[in-house]
Image (cartoon, rainbow, N blue to C red; front, side, top):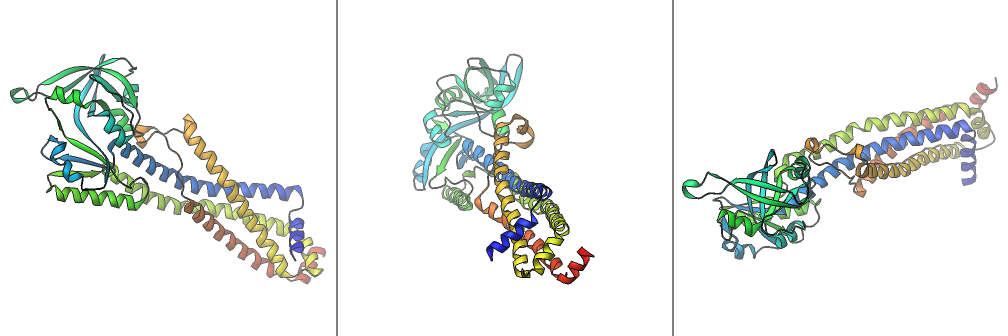
Length: 400
């Protein structure tokens, strides 16, 4: 039975034209599948890259006192009651950076290198008047390691509170957050040094912390855990402090990406439908060019059941081969996004400058299953069309 099926397939696919047509159909079908997978992967990749960049800069939770500066020791004992793995205090201030004849508004962050590295995984080495700039900020100002810059900020007290003060810093490195705006605005200095300049002693105005067991960034359960902990901390501190999850700053954009992913995936089914018409054209081509052979084998005793099995096997083979090829096309697309400069995104427009496809196995299954459904529809149409012709009618038509 199986040998008969494969013999019929051999008859259907005999000839160079049939093989060329088959290869074209497989490439067309696999390309349409790749388009959908790549679209999902790009949007999920954007989502993951954005969250990673935000988490890298802010930790899981950011806590700030509504009244301004405070000492970490004031609330440290209460924070110890919660599942917190790493914690660091920082001083955050807006300032102007002046270099040569150019100036730029920046977010200046005074950090304690060791604890800050534990929270964000940034390996910063800062002593005295050292400063580390965001990668885009360094590039835009045309600075190099070892150059000196002047930071202007308001740090006076009493009657001189609003007077600007100028301090010189030496550029010792740059960092990349993966988010264009932060790479363009953030600068880091030593916490002890900036506290001394501001006359703050041990005071800070923000705490960054990580939550235990919250490593998986794409898990809804992790987001829920971080949100719940933030609300608990706010309640415990009587609303005097704000606990801000790391994604809140871009929450609207993240939600928009989720909605767009669904709508775009639905719209792109049109691409699959077009490629399915190509498959149908291939079936019709084989039906016309191999009609004599088909009717002859039926006349020789091959049952319609065997013929139908051959057609279904052919169409499922096209589907399976297309899925296999699309897997490699997705990998090629991913490589291109990560390594080809022509595919880099303008960070000022798309927030992140470089993307990688992020595809969970379930999306492969969903897209492959939907494409299989379309193939089965084509199989049903094909079998119905073939069943309408009787053997005698076909023989008369072909040999009259």
